[in-house]
Structures are given as structure tokens and as C-alpha cells.
Image 1: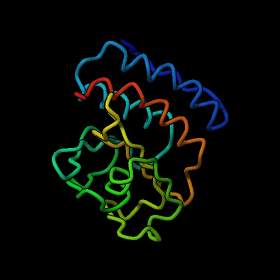
Image 2 (image 1 turned 90 degrees about the vertical axis):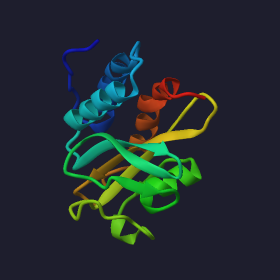
Image 3 (image 1 turned 60 degrees about the vertical axis):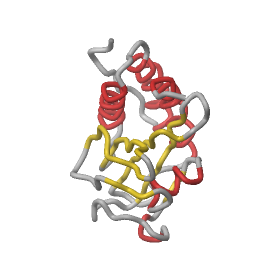
Length: 162
């Protein structure tokens, strides 16, 4: 179990490279989903200066708010709605440079300008949750974020039933 988070690097990629093994150490050996999601959302929020970082869990035909860091959030998001529901429905990471230009965007915070949403898949490849990150700046996220965030959350799938 980690007790300290080391944040190093001048570039986004360098910060991700430092965070990746630490994030996996937070997840390794943990059997409680909420504990793993809470620590991971905290580690991401501490490393990067984002508006909101957290998880939504699949419950039936909707996403339900899980552990997060940031301002109060939407509690439930229908399948296929907004960026989170769309990433779930499409089973793929979505990068949104301007949330106001995204059809059907759900504005949980009026401060959000850009967003990245990464599906969490169980061993069967089924989306069981999504990692949602919002920035107060437009075009904050790119393929580097998508690639590293997918790698960071990959071990989470083992915590969910297949």
C-alpha cells in the first residue's frame, strides 16, 4: 500500500510515467472497488490540475456517481447520454476539446470546458465503469492522456465480476 505520491516531471508525459507505476501499486492487491477508485481518483487529481476527476459505475441502464475529486457532480447519467454515457455506449475513450460543441453534453459543472472519458472493462470486455476527467481549460486532453489513462485504469477491470 502506498502512503506517499511522488509527482515529478516537467511535461505531461513525464508526469504520467511517474504516476503509472504508483497508480498500479495503489490497485495491486486491493479487493475493494470503492477503495481502489477513491485512491486512483485522488492520485490523478493530485498529479494534474484538473477541475474534476472521478468514476461513474454502471448500474443497470445508467451510470451512477462513484468516488471522485472536485466539485459536486451529476449523480446519474443515462446510457448513451452526454460524454460519459456515449463513451460507455461506444465502448471507447472519448476526447472532447470543447464540451459545449458535444451533442447532448450534460453540464454537471458550468466550469468544465473539455473532457476525457475512459471506459473501465471487466475481464469479459464489458464496460463496468468510466473514468471521467473534466478541465476548466478548452482542449486540455489529447492522445497522450487517452493512452496513459487507459494504461492506468486497465488493472481495475479485475475488481469487477466478469
